[in-house]
Length: 81
Image 1 (spheres, rainbow, N blue to C red):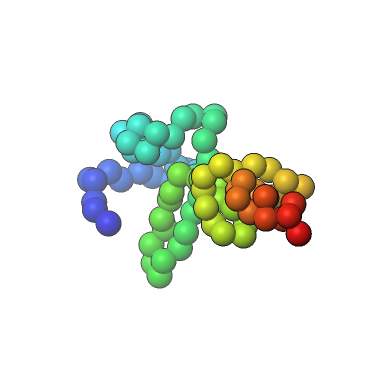
Image 2: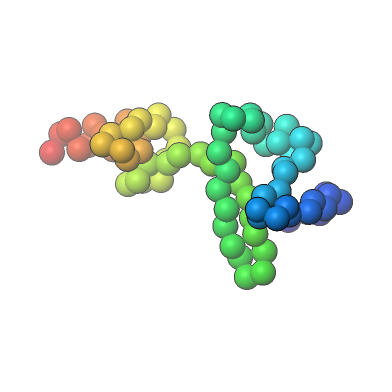
């Protein structure tokens, strides 16, 4: 992890703004993309959310099936059974 020299205040509602430089570097589009949060000891990690297959965790060729994300490969295996 590297420090980028950026500090942001959290408002009274618990919100914070991701600086535009960070959003640009992660290709995060306002109103389109989502982020996910992870906690590691005393750190909070924010990553751009990328849906992944519930079975194999692949993030390629993802489709929605009954409100779950499934890759095409696993979907083909399910159809074959």
